[in-house]
Length: 475
Image (tube, one colour):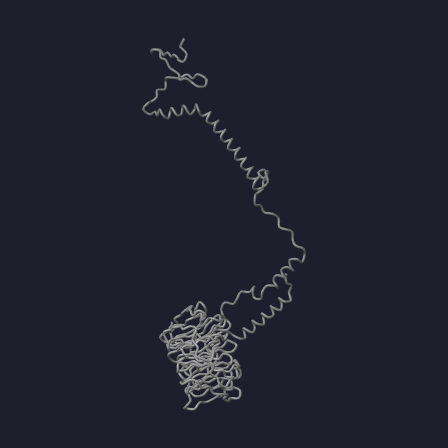
């Protein structure tokens, strides 16, 4: 009988052998081994075989440990979800509901009959007029003049101001020694006055604000005041010692600038009419403009200088000093235009060597913007209805340019004149601009819009305003 843990085998013709069995940790059935299988040890990996043997022995316990870990993990996950539901959703049973956190709900009940219609009507009728309709972005700008008139013998002189359009819708233009009046409403032409050879030619014209009187500057340094209705001279204003090339009205005050480099203020209501004297320019004063508020006067000269004067100091009776001396232009400053929608904004244009339009803050004297136009700037006109500026030019195109302010993008270029466009004047309604050039023509451009379209827009706006006033309001 063999000892425990060993087994004997006998084969005929061979000696008996002993096979030893490795101890087992768990009791099991004894397996008989056969010696008929002879392995090839050179092809065996004993490390892998050892791992497989030990793995089979430990697989049961490891599987139990993994199951216990998974069970604990599942319990933690369930507890975490319950805590999350209780704290965030205030509902511990949400995990047992087959519903989503964000779910579609039924539509709200419909409003009472007639409620929706009344509220819609109420809010639509109280909307500001024009708010629901897109604003018109573009308008047609005619490229050809609306009318052309002959202007024979008009002086081709950059430093003179020979054209003006009065509040009575009458255009005054100086042709040589004669001043003519053209009624834009009726088309009638009248001769206002004719200067003799010693006094003429006429060097400047300017309508008074009343639309009845007109001032005329002459080469003999005289300034005459005329009544346009009776076609007679009212008085003569003497102060200058050389030709008077620029005139500007501020109520009953007439400012005059001459080749004597001096600016005078005249109160046309009194006998001693000179109420102020301004001396700052070194050469001829060729541009004068009062601001719409009447608080400041701008003067430009052939000395490339632009001055800003205070109205109170200008009528003090003595020689006044300027508020600002602006010297950034490189040529004569004749073109001046005050902005109608910003009281302290002034546009000025320079001559051939400068070619720039500059914008000034007249309160501080700072240059806000400068644009090189490429040619001599002869005259400027602001639009009364849009933020636009019209400029007239000399060599080489002799064109009018419509600018969008403040971007200064060219909206249109109007050509037709064959000589430099020296003068611009705007109609009382602000839609038409008259231009006079050295080619002896006077052209009328409907550049700032169509008055018929504007009247239709005003009527539509009035109807909308009336409708809004008659609608109900929320207080």
